[in-house]
Image (cartoon, rainbow, N blue to C red; front, side):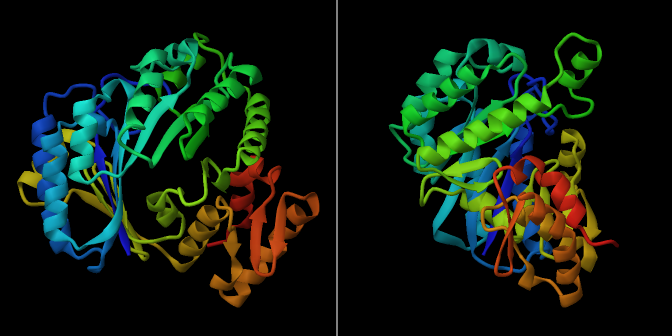
Length: 373
């Protein structure tokens, strides 16, 4: 099984916290779609990943909901022509609520999309303005209600730890999402990424910096509320009702191979990682010339083990140490001892899992478990 990720590098406006690759001008959107269609064919003949059925397709970005229906259909048609697609493949489209209308939703469903990821972030106007989102609260609520008429499998994104977001408002955000009955939530702590507009504004003292203690408190509250509501906390940032886990992202966390199409997109085959150039015009020019504009890194055995530690520890199942060589397993278990003693890790047979408190320190713990090169 394998997956395909398609990066659509366009947005109406820049959210001040975002460090993904995108452009706010749609001037070259038609050229970009043609280039992605051409890359589908080039990548299929490149054999970076061995031919096998495609189980998941994911339109990410950027803002894929800016695509016209005919543009998305052209990309999907090219994928279906070059690959064997599983009959029950999960096909996800990321969408902003201000892009949702009956015509688009009907067209997406007719094209084969069966899962929507809606970028809500907050149901409070002051938070949306603070984050420089393109939509407002009315569009957020109307967008979810409209999407539920066409799709059962919906996830929405929420952000916590925003300066000024009280625990009470955070609870109301979560309760609003639950009231809609969406079966999946992705909830992220606001992160100040280097060189983003938010980073620059904080350095200039134009915006308050995030409060790590407040973020930890709101994450603990989130875990409690969603556990009470019957959602599985199956990955650090993801919660789902039984049967509604993201199959695409779950495959990432299991180390399943995937293609990445579009500028800045990554690909992985289990032995090496590739990433396309993060420049729209250079990407288009290379594809027009019949070239795949990527860089590649061959992973060493230690790098592969450390990647496994990093991604597996974020999941509910945790790290399966039987996948390691005996000496690697001994090193990892030895390093894990102090976290087991603190109650941040649990060991069940050969599995290491984070406790709720341990999830607050997931990145640091995984880095400490890494093998030395």
